[in-house]
Image (cartoon, helix red, strand yellow):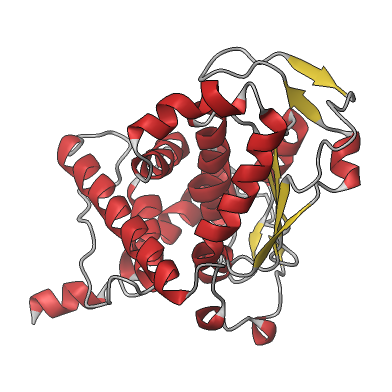
Length: 307
């Protein structure tokens, strides 16, 4: 019975561990600034939530379930290794256990379980971002990550951006919901910061307001119409630290291709712009975004990000 209780304790984002984490976050926010009023974003109405189970990528439901299962197993393995190697990690709030539930491996809620576990376990947002990026790295054979920057991203940046946009729709619909390849929006192209020599972790030479070609930006974007991951987590902090920042870092550092992700918390949309380096102002605004009205932390996650 105790095992069953432990299994059932992590069935959703509103698990006891997550509620504990949210309480800690809110308490930290209150002690940090007792006079600050927490702002929130309403978010898209729950009654218009899509039937995500019926939304599939171009390869169909079987491929989506396979992608989900692999991602979940890789994430569980990464968290288990981190728990084992860092039991005395000062970033950890407690000694965490990788959740094991009765959910099928291809159940999306399993991803939310693991994400909740990761975000409730660590106080340091940078460590959360690093773990999420390492999960993405583990999904690819090393020879692809070793060769893609020099064989494709740097010599053929426009082609690489289009290819990554297409691959994101094929391999990411199960995670994000309905999404389509699109052109980078004109308003983003006007403020675009291009990377002209972006190596892994190296200095980036930037060129402002000069398009590389007349076709630059065409089919280099992906529009997520209403993000499933954000919808199920209901937390802007989790979106920023478990998705946006680690995904941008993965493409820049491991694939050699800049990426800007622009989530809209009012509508649930997210615009991917491959080949575009996010500006410092955009990243600051993303981190300053208030939590969703229905967030379990009640907006306290924003203060946790600032800490």
